[in-house]
Image 1 (cartoon, rainbow, N blue to C red):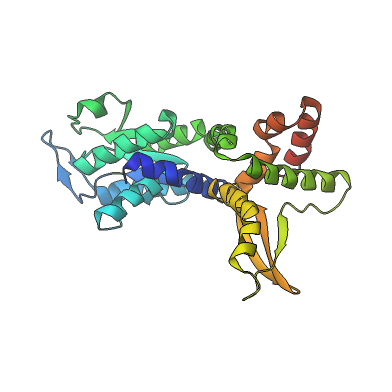
Image 2 (cartoon, rainbow, N blue to C red):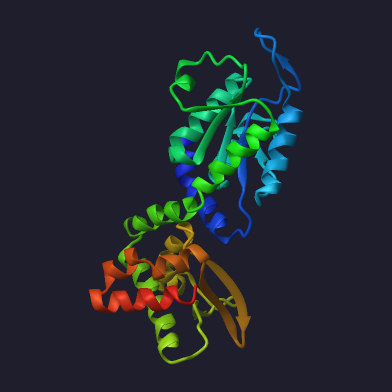
Length: 292
């Protein structure tokens, strides 16, 4: 599978994980050369570079950077590249030693992410000969003080980056869902809103009692419950909710629990204004946002 196709498939999963995650993560794309001397007399030292960036991230309240290059075979490598790029709040592309892999990774990062969320930087006096890379905005630095200042400015500029990215995704979720799946979400939203209005404990999930004991269903009976499961599965694939199965009394019960991304979707103007009249939409959105 090509990078773009794989990215489209995996993006909702990574976005949902980022919304749930408490800490903020940085992805680092760079060469693993322990030391590389440039024609100009300078050198590149991966160990020192990573130590600088790790220290800066810690001081600025970010998790230690996730670095591409921990897996060996090519299939795993591509999956890891996409994970680092899509499952990070910010991406640092360090191109002081622009190997073929680094240039390829930078190309993927700049094509899949908003330009402002990718910092392309290089330590002086590195020589970048790739015309494609030279067309990007490269930030140059000399030492730790430099790179820390650059990272701090970069991180401050991206403080609302996840919220903007989530808004772009939620704006188009409805186009991925069938009317039946939208109906389940409306039912979930209505239940939550009724709880809020009635001063009751909010229950976000939908639950269904299904006769799933061994030997109880024949193939024909199985078909009668398929539509709801199909609709629910659409919602799960969009990472708006997840399934939970448990045994209650005389039968199995499955529940559809919204993810945090899903809760934001049910409270968003994108969902409320599309499926309710304006007055009701504004009130529902306001009430649901109040409990997030």
